[in-house]
Image 1: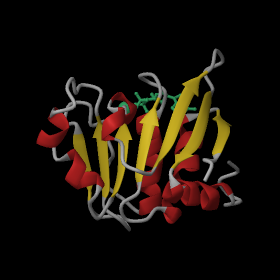
Image 2: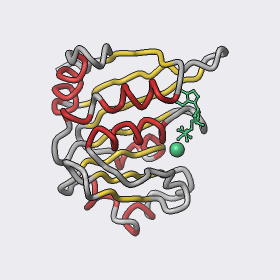
Image 3: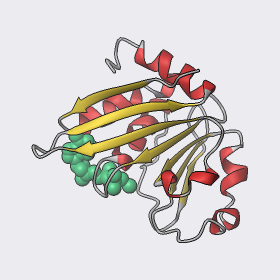
Length: 162
Ligand code: ADP
Ligand code: MG
């Protein structure tokens, strides 16, 4: 089955968070979302919006130094990875990456595309591009059947206007 792709422009961090929060109701246990884009593109802002949509009250900060931060108190446990500082794919085992993404929560992985062979069978890719005016182009693309279904329902949510 072919993948789906949608792009939407956001002009403020709040708009990126708002867009991200509309994804939250459609997430299922085991879903994986890979976030790509330059440093400062807005990947962590996106995860903050998802967390708000899941009902996480704790402040969501960048896991750049911790690699993994977990937020168990929302509708589904949220696992937030940032693989930027990881140099070797073998380190993924050490941080429990595979058990975590196959586990009971939803996983958001910044820089997940760095290790393509470690990506799950199905995942949603969110790529955020900054243009010369400072606006963000948030592109959502599905890989595999589950992500396609997720993106389909999200894109048909009138509030998301994807
Ligand atoms: P990343 O995780 O991709 O490195 P962050 O989400 O940590 O990036 O940071 C994005 C920065 O860009 C924040 O300081 C945020 O306030 C700013 N920003 C400006 N416009 C936007 C936008 N439209 N969407 C997201 N972030 C934006
Ligand atoms: Mg980040």
